[in-house]
Length: 126
Image (tube, rainbow, N blue to C red; front, side, top):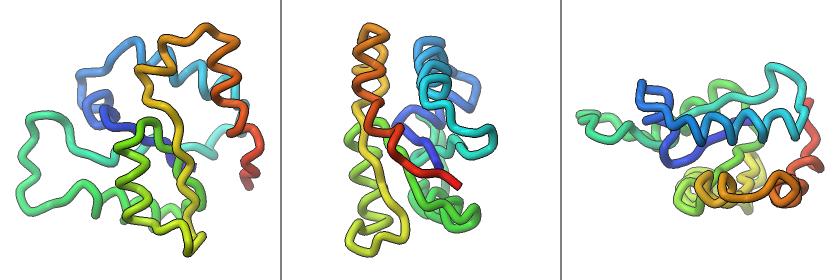
């Protein structure tokens, strides 16, 4: 399972948002997936980075293929739309799961967050 969201590249490049960090710790704790079954992989470059000839989408898709990922969990509509463009859902090779943006989830009370994430509990991971 790859987890991604619009600001992930910023979060892993030294400008981490403590609210998102706390949110994703809560998300992973709630889901209780086995250690090593999830990977955070950015679908975009950090703000202000000039990637030259590289495209973030190509790097993201290469990571999905390299790791043999079957499920991509996208937080935010932009990330989900981009992932669905890379992995058309009629092919079913990679299943894209769209979730609300991290900012929307971070504003929820704990029981509301669990309700919003409950659909993910049904995903069967190896």
